[in-house]
Length: 109
Image 1 (spheres, rainbow, N blue to C red):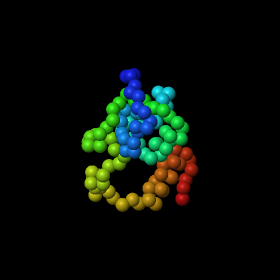
Image 2 (image 1 turned 180 degrees about the vertical axis):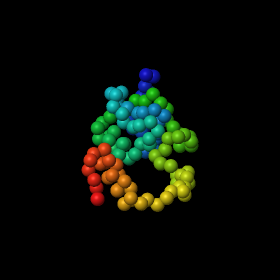
Image 3 (image 1 turned 90 degrees about the vertical axis):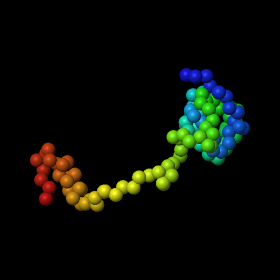
């Protein structure tokens, strides 16, 4: 593994994202996943647990960086689904039950 970069806990701000996972000072337990933004509760945890620094082998992702990392997709980026047929749930249920018992000599009325 690459050598870690040390980040003082006081430097972590809400919304910060990193290109690689961020670990607690032990270098084993993950604090923040790759590309995920720091939330207020992350910052509170650092203070409450008196964590002096964090470790990562990545770099800070700038807000203007258009990477694949995001917490959610904008609705405009989703494709509409037009060609779905309505479900006949009762027919599907009967078919599934029939399939369950098809290998056994049990008849369903």
